[in-house]
Amino acid sequence: MRRDPNRTVRVIGELGADIVALQEVDRRFGDRRGVLDPELLQEMTGLTPVALTDRLGLRAHGWHGNLLLLRGAEVEEARAVTLPGLEPRGAIVADIRIAGQPLRVIAAHLGLLHQSRLLQARFLSREIEAGDGRPSLVMGDFNEWRLGAGCSLMPLRRELRAVKRSAQTMASFPAQMPVLPLDRIIGCRRAEIGELRAHESVLARKASDHLPIRATLSLPQVQSAVM
Image (cartoon, rainbow, N blue to C red):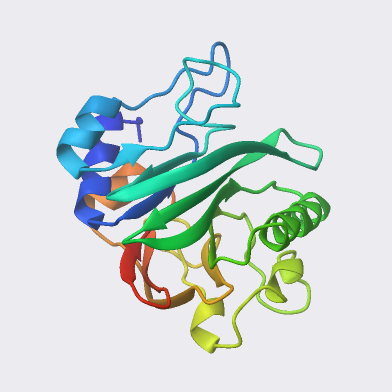
């Protein structure tokens, strides 16, 4: 299926989410320019891309293909970080306020190799630990389907709230008949995830080989929708 950026924007609009993490939004080679139209995106969805002051490549939308979109949130700081591993991978770490509540959001696309994902999960765990104690949300394509002891995301488990909902998974790949939970939304430090589900629509199945997953996020005094 040929990539259609406008179709992708329509799927984002279907979600109605307040926080959205996207992957592979830049061309993989050449000048890495972004494939979406930011003005159309804002007009159709009300979401605004988070600007990264320290990233390279002015024509890119995000960092290593990651893009973070917000609605009605104040960005205090947003950093592009390079993840360890054999493949070029990155993440966005953003400290925001949503409905007046502080939240750290990490959007990431982890590697294909188990050992690389393990290193990357440890790196993201340290990013959570290094924060100011605010609730944290980790989301993106983690390329990990295992759920037990062999899961490369185990370093993140110690950051989870001691509630079952924060660690639930949902099959998202392949989009036509999802069987593998490659995409995750993980709530840490008083960020509680609920109502996790895959977004299934005709457009979503055509727009990507992954279905979007979405959830509600409960903070101490606020509830928002995330994808």
